[in-house]
Image (cartoon, one colour):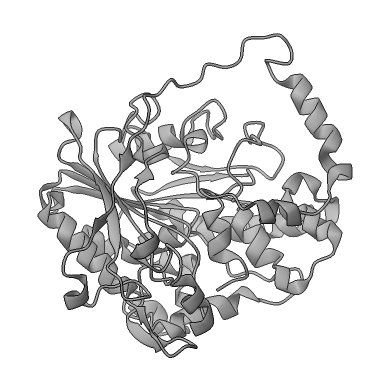
Length: 428
C-alpha cells in the first residue's frame, strides 16, 4: 500500500488528530492569507452570507451483507462477507439506479493487506451504517438529478479496486482473500435481483480507488442491460497518472505493480493493452480509457491532493519542510514547486485528449486542490462548489446524464486561475 494511501482517503470521513499534529509548520507561508480571507468573508464584512441549502436531516443507511458470500467466494480480505448500503428510489426515480463503488487506496503487500483486514477497508466486522451525501443525497435542492433514484453504496474491502481474484498468506499464517472481482460481480447480481435489472437508467460511479474500479468495470456493467437502457459511468478522482515524483523516479509504479501481482489482476484489464504492455501499465487510467466504449464522465482535479501527497511527494522520500508545506497545501508552493505540479497537470490534460473524440463522454477537470468531490455536499453543489463554464459539478454531471447539453467537457486553466476553488473543499 502506498504510504498512508488508505488512511489518507479515510480522513475524508474520520479526521485523525495525530495526522493534524504531524502537519508541517507553514504559518509563515499562509497565515496572512487566512487573515485576509477572513476579512473578505461576507459575515466579516457585515454582508449577508450566501444562501445555504436547508436540507432535511439525513438518515443513516443500514448495511446489508451479501447473501451466500462464502459459497460464492466473494469475501473481504479477512473472509467476512462484503456489504453495501441500499436506499430505495421513489416517484420519477423509482426505476433509476446509481451504484457507487467506495474508494480507499490499495494494499500491495501481504503485510499491508493483513493490517488492512483489521479495519472497515478489509472486514465487514468494522462496517457501520452511513450517511449519504453529495450525489447520494436525498435532498432535491442539493441533488436535483439523482435525489430520488435508487442508490447503492458498495463497501470496499478487498484493497484491489474490486478487481483481484487470488488468495495469499498473512505474516501470521492466516489466509488473505483477494476477491474484489467476485465481490463486485456478486453484489451487482444481488442488486439486479432487487430491481436493478428493470432499470430505465443506470449510473455506475466511484471515488478514488473506486473511481479506478468504475473505469475497469464500466463496459461490463453496461453489457448487463438491454440496449434501450441508458447506462453511463462517472469516475471521480480515479484518474491516476503515471508520472515521476520529486526524486525523478516512478515510485508509484511499485504500488500498482504490487497490487496487480499480489491480487492477480488481469481479467478486467484491456486485452489490447495487455498484448503490448505490462499489466501494471494497463492498470493506469490513461490506458484504460482508450478501450472503454460506454459513455463516461471523468471528474478529477488537475492538482489532485491525493496524488500530490502520495504519488508526487511521497513521505518515503523524506521531503524537506518546503516540500512538506507544499504537499500540505498548494497555496504554500513556491514558483519552482508550482512548475513541477503544473507538469503533473499537463500530463493529465495530455492523457485526456483521447476523450475529446469520444461521443457521449464528459469532463470536469478543475484546478482546485481537492480529492473525491461527488460524495461531499460542499463540492457537489453548494455556494463553495468549484465551477467550470459557470456550472457546479452537479449541474455539469446532470446536463451530461440527461443529454441536455451538446458539450460537457471542461478543463480548467492552471492554478490559481479559478476563483471558485474554495478552502472549504475536501483536500483528503
